[in-house]
Length: 114
Length: 113
Image (spheres, each protein chain N blue to C red):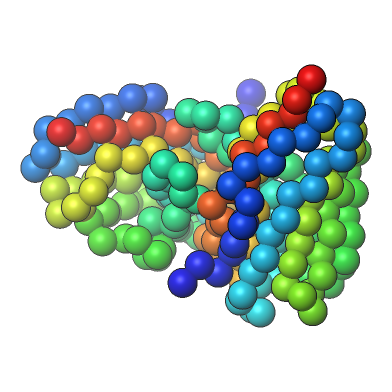
């Protein structure tokens, strides 16, 4: 059953701590993405990766870091430098070549930092 | 600077009637547009897309229209069903590959029985 998994569904952290959000896909997609959604807002792009061992900053990359060591995995670290980390985080993936590049999303992780 | 705008935060439509969701964009480099449906606390689900070289794309009850000169697209849902109640996001991308999408803020569609 192909899809994107994000874990955990809910995550709580104290201010000043780094936290890593997991994203795994078994769709054999080359490209992966991280977005965040705030209440009443659209999704905003944090980072994306079109291929293993390569990634690019999105519109709001400050305070975040990523790695892409495997095709299936694209973890996002929310560092203590991120000023407003509480949000709903969404991971997505898409094909990279020959397709229309529709992005398919995971179920999301709600991060609360207090 | 919001490049993709959905100016109606919410829309209420009677079951069985047509739902029309609108989206405007400012970046003329956008070449591909997508609509997503989202329930609370879940990831968005891809609905339908359209390339900038077309003006219409249809998939079952869903049709997307693109007016490039007006930088406007719309999603039509006919007939509207109770399960269509959700937040609908318009998204766009520029050419060149699997880059990230730019999303609007969404329209909450409510289907009234």
